Image (cartoon, rainbow, N blue to C red):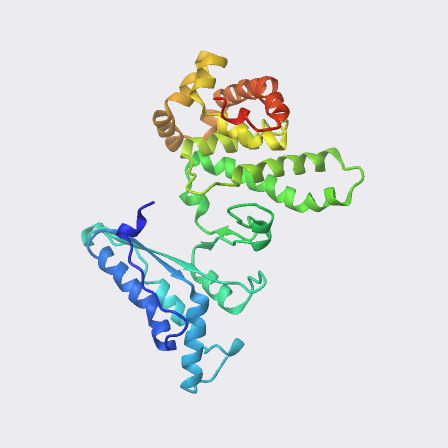
Length: 317
């Protein structure tokens, strides 16, 4: 919200000459470098480098340079690497400014192995792959977990997140493997069914509304609840309510044991602990708190949500 107050947009539309389209990303990068060199933290988003490569291909063909794969010139990889490698973190003696580059690539039919996508993927520190198929299923943001990769993710994560995220990713991968089994009908092995049940609830948690954010502490606790199986017994239609009421101070103060109240009332203090320590340091206390909350939710809240046909119960707290 309000980001345009400190945003510069360099725009080149399709009607302009290929040379102007080719130069637009470099102009935007130069603006970001100006702030970086003066000690600021800047981010430049290239939307998108697929069209930038097309503009460069047009220029190269007009200049009668020999075409290569998909008619792109042979140095298109160098063009993109030279652009993206201008993003850097400066030494504190030079002002400690930084410039982060976020390139956007368009894939044709979801083909991530095409020429330009593979070139850019080999340059960057990872990729977030957005799937139109997931978007059509109502999953937003439509991130394909299987094709999204981070080469520095585990090293950059807090210790409390690292252990949980590995378990969540393993569970979700099993869900995607066996998801089609449920559609075939018939009897399903209980172990396979448990993968499907948990995966569906992970899907619910990962869906976000516009401008909705979660603190680190809240993320870790919700992921812990999923990884430990506390949400498996919750009805799929009530899973979002389970996460939404988990940190409700009124509910915790009135219906749960008083020893669990600090978990939801002192978010800043709890977050400091989760930044500094691994999840095992809190596992026993978290398990007791979430188990107590789950029992209350299944006994008192879920039946009312399921019986509430007009969805009037959702704002009771």
